[in-house]
Structure formats: C-alpha cells, structure tokens
Image 1: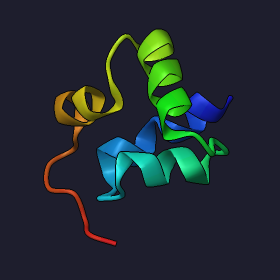
Image 2 (image 1 turned 180 degrees about the vertical axis):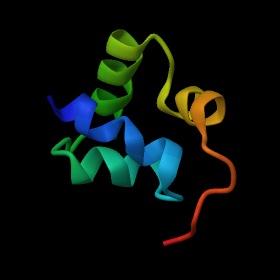
Image 3 (image 1 turned 90 degrees about the vertical axis):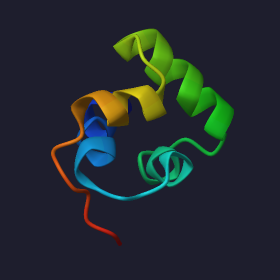
Image 4 (image 1 turned 30 degrees about the horizontal axis):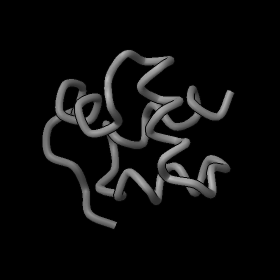
Length: 59
C-alpha cells in the first residue's frame, strides 16, 4: 500500500527519494529502496528516470 502511494511522487515531484520514503512511512531509506526494487523491479531513482513526466516541479 505504501509503495502504491509512493509511485507517483518520483514521477511528479522533485522530492528526494529518501524524503518520499519518509512521507509514505519508511524511517529507514535502505528498507524503502529495497522494497521498491523488489515490488517495482527498479530502484527508486531508475523508476524516476524511466517514468518522469517531463520537467519535475521543485518543492
């Protein structure tokens, strides 16, 4: 559930990957990266690069 909530954030925001993990409930960035990689099949950074919707807004 947390990962599905986090999927749009790397595509649509300029938030740091660790900040996204924190916002969806992960206090350990390493755990967030591992779970995303296992579920999505890409690292959070690779997911952002592949699915980014144009220019990301800065926040």
